[in-house]
Image (cartoon, rainbow, N blue to C red; front, side, top):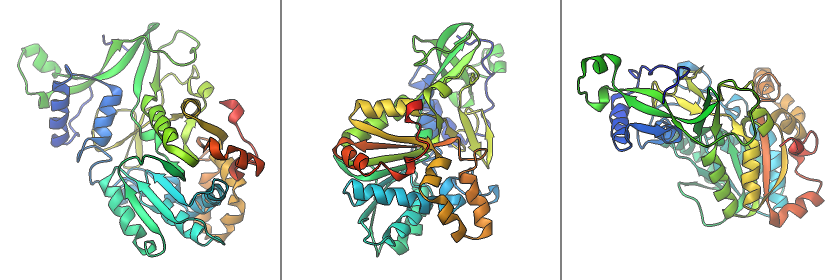
Length: 399
């Protein structure tokens, strides 16, 4: 079924030939149709070809350096230095000496956290582990952190450990996890996937074509899945189901025996996420510091991302034994952690960049911070007055 509101087939000419050949093989095994989470997984993580698996630059400040987007740690060291205050408190309250960072980017956050934490009186940090799927980013991290390896045990991991005793940090990790798409069209719900179809002229001529010459197009299939809360109105509506992100949080919760998890990302609570006016969903693409809404073109060359449903994250964590101990905006979190005191220690030029981290029209409101804690230390954290990043303006009640 392909309703009239679905976009026409995308021009995939910008997709590299190697990725087109790979997708042709994948679609050939799946009746020429993939649910969007599987397509997104191929676009981002196909070995050697996906966006996060190839050697192309990704993070940087300007298109001139070949990058596609910038994250908070690259904007200013004020982010990492302020976050370090929360990490330091968490290490002490949870009685652990290890930090695990998922998705280490360029290594900027790790560098600032390690440097700041090691300079703290009676430093508790003894080991820093980075989980990174991108070989290009892993190489950049290793080069950047090499001078610190004589001061600290720094490791890279590619698989889950059996148990985790650590403070876990995830900055812009959940937004890159594949999602399924559900669409309401003319009052009927369907799962929106991706099909590989022949070009229109080939259909008219009835020619048999190699799969590599085909195009990618949106294609809907009936589904009983619906949003977790009813969406008012009868208008067409699209939303993302964060099934893999919830599973990731569940796995993390099952392994975290001692410690806590700090998640920083752009997103909303459930009530905001499924607002009737958010009818086109949140799926976005980033390439060359420009955004678009066409994930079917330039596959493997641009980032695909969605906003995070933090209510779903909290529920998944609680279902697997973690306690939710804080949720607020990034701006409020950083201010609680001493942003105002750290800001004057950098140059005027860097201050301009750093202020973007807390301004509500920049990253201060759209980005949220959530902390989840192993139940073994919930009482200790509460007895200490809670985590410092959430002492004021906590929004757990809004989830």
